[in-house]
Image (cartoon, rainbow, N blue to C red):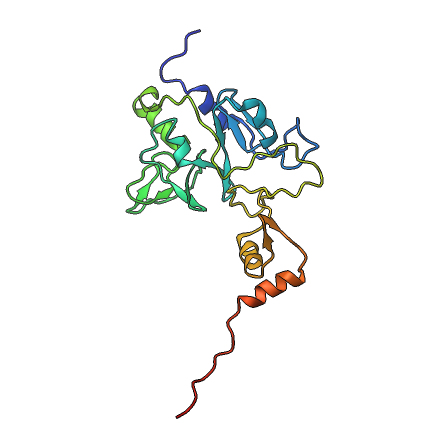
Amino acid sequence: MIMEHHDKPAWLESLYAQKFFASCPIHDSLKKNEKNICCLDCCNSICPHCVASHRSHRLLQIRRYVYHEVVRLEDLEKLMDCSNIQAYTINAAKVVFIKKRPQNRQFKGSGNYCTSCDRSLQEPFIHCSLGCKVDYVLKHYKNLSPFLKVCKTLQLSPDFFVPQDMGDDDETMYTTLSSDSDSDNVSFSCTELVRKKRSGLYVCGRLSNTVTDEDMATSMSRRKGIPHRSPLC
C-alpha cells in the first residue's frame, strides 16, 4: 500500500501515540528511568539510560509544562514549519505544546483564538499547539509535506544529562527543564540552589548537607565589616 502525500510522518504520529514520563520497563531497577525522550527514527519513547543505544538516531527531548507535554521550539523547527504556533518560555527556553488543549467556550469575544480548539491566544498566533497546526494544514491544504523539513541529525540539548552507569549511591546531579510541580526530575529547586550558594554550601558542582569550619569562615569573610566614622574636627 502506497502512502499518500498528506499522511503524517511516522515520527509525528509517535509524538501523539507514545506515553511519556512513565517508568522505562528496561531500566526499571535504575534511577532516573523516566521516558522523557522520543527517538524519531525508532518512533519510540526512551529513558536517559536508553540513549547509549540510540546515539546515532534523532532524539527529541520531551518536557512538561502545566501537566502537558511540550518540546523546544528550536528542536521542532528543524523538523517542520512552526510559524503561527504560540510558544511559551520555560527556564529561558521557548517550548511548544504537542497536543491540543481543548477549551470550551460558549461565546467568542473580539480576540485571537486557536483555529482548532478555540483557545485564547496572543497576536499574531493562530495555533496553540503542534497538533492544532497539523490539523489545520491537513484540513485546508490536504498536504503536510510542504511544511516538513529534512532533518538528518537531532541531538539532545546540552543541558540534558545522560546518566552513565549510575548506581544506587551515585550523587551525580541530574536536572531537566521540567516545570511540573509534581515532577521528580529536578533534584533541587532554584531557590535552594541560590540559598546554598550564598551560604557557601555549593562546592565543585555538588550540594553539601554539612557545614564545615572552612565553609563558615568563607561565608563570614564575604560580609561587610563594621563601618567606621571619620574623626570629628
